[in-house]
Image (cartoon, rainbow, N blue to C red):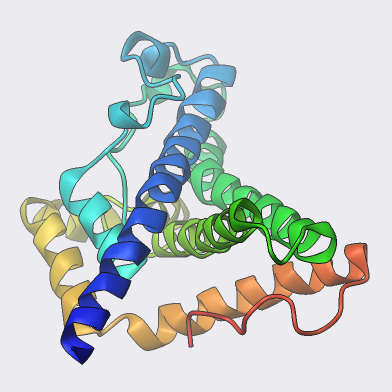
Length: 228
């Protein structure tokens, strides 16, 4: 009976997580493509990546990791840095655009969460469903944003580090064939759980602190951070 209840809870969580994962991935990759496009690079537009269709941005392994580990990645947006006036700053801006968008989406999710928690009816089923969806949206977006700042290919942090420290590119070339499996092993082994959990919790609590100040909320909304 307990095992059945556990699996039902897991299934319920996945039903909530799946739609917010799609939105988080869509926002992340759209931001990469949009910034590169604004810097003069037509490649993301030509590849059809300037779209809000999340199916264009999914990476199978990365999406599964995001659903089950709350940390993952999407299919990288192809860019052509020859169009940038300043290649170094352009790559850094494009790389950071995705995580930055996720943090914006997380803040907006918590803001709406707070508004519903403060003004919504506690007896309304639809309000309860939206509150849970918004909470998971904040969790998934923070998880996606922080994870992608890790300096391991193909994550965004590796592009930033390669521009700030060009010598690391040789190492990245060596591990490129194994990059997906390296990330999956790191996630499955739990090696990243503590450092990423701490970073995620700090960002979650910081964003929620801003929301509480803006809305003058009572301390009991929302739950404590899901990361630690």
